[in-house]
Length: 164
Image (tube, rainbow, N blue to C red; front, side, top):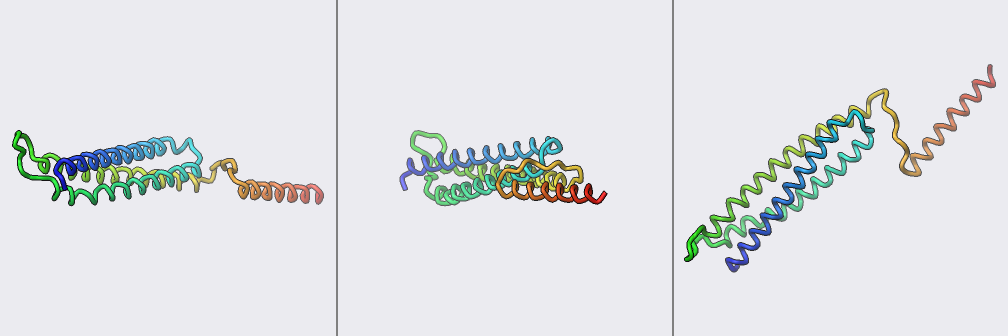
């Protein structure tokens, strides 16, 4: 592999790793914000949002895994000889940055997982509160269930009124 091509791939890999790390930090911040406001939000919607964040985190991990798989091959492909014009060798320049990027991503994922776990705990506790208000139905099945419950209550009410 050409040294210039290897350096370009190293730069692109590092940019991708940094972008994914920033995305994960954004997920973590969003989860933390939702957790702070969890008492004011419907717990069912909170669980749905936590599921979406978890899916995004999983996708970011998969993307990162594909970028990380290039690190070893790039480390071998980057020349370790000092260029004739002076400065650092490409290997000395890129390999530590790539390894640091991997470590930073792992730390960001750990933080995001902790915040998502707290968000799931808050949403689960909210779902089990006795004074929890139900959210509006968002699909035909929920609408039918709500309608049948209302119809059942109305029939029971009518039976009680007639027996009095």
